[in-house]
Length: 117
Image (cartoon, rainbow, N blue to C red; front, top):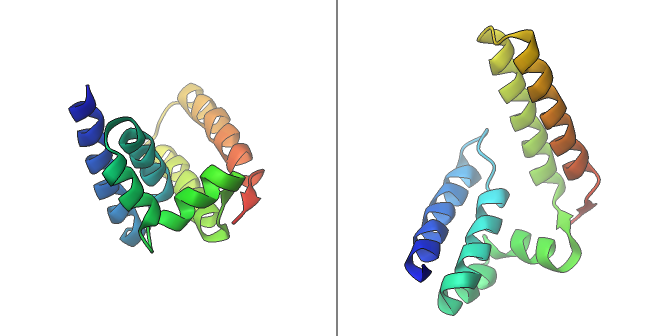
């Protein structure tokens, strides 16, 4: 099982790095997942990720203070809005849109009520 968590962590780091450069892909959730997976599989990778000068600070801020940076919050809100807009433009049914809107509102509430890093 250790190798499954390690592989999952490596994939999440890759997605987190991609999210750092792509506008609609959030980096922080993937990096948090990677830290969680590495904590279960490899102390070395876990220490590397937390100590990384670029990738580590958002993870440490979340783990120590439950905080999300203003930039990460703004990107997350933009991603939520974009996903809803894409669903509307794709002609998704009103029932599905209502369910999606409720879920996105819950996620947005959670993100916006966290402290700022």
